[in-house]
Image 1 (tube, rainbow, N blue to C red):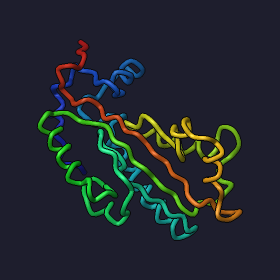
Image 2 (cartoon, one colour):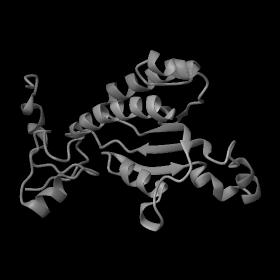
Image 3 (cartoon, rainbow, N blue to C red):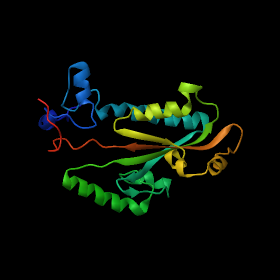
Length: 210
């Protein structure tokens, strides 16, 4: 049982609907709103996804040899390179770029001082994925992945492979890089998700509804 809840911390937003949050939509649709932070739209529901994902990740690796790794690849205006996967679990930012950890720490401290937050981008790389997953039209693998990722709180964009970067690339170059190592297995699939953080609760700029 959770005994460390502090519902009173949310009293400042009792009459405030947060931009980008579902509390206004919930009140309009269901006629109720739990402003105390434990509502159905709370990001706390992602805790069960983490638990289930950890089990699935281990199962896929042991049963099928599919390796799935993820890391932070941008926070605010700080882009990060995937230099060393071994560093991801060694820092609080899950950062694969050791040279940028101090910059991330400075950014977070500045945001905390200002009482603000900022968006970020994470990258997930799946290796050893067999060909043939998914179904035609509405249940394609890309569609299922995008559907799952977009259902996560605060995710506002999903890119698969080169994503929107292909707009500025010749298709002959893009197609050449997607050749598989074998007829049955795709060498690598890369997914990126962009997170837009909800504005800080209690901000003076938020609209008030009574």
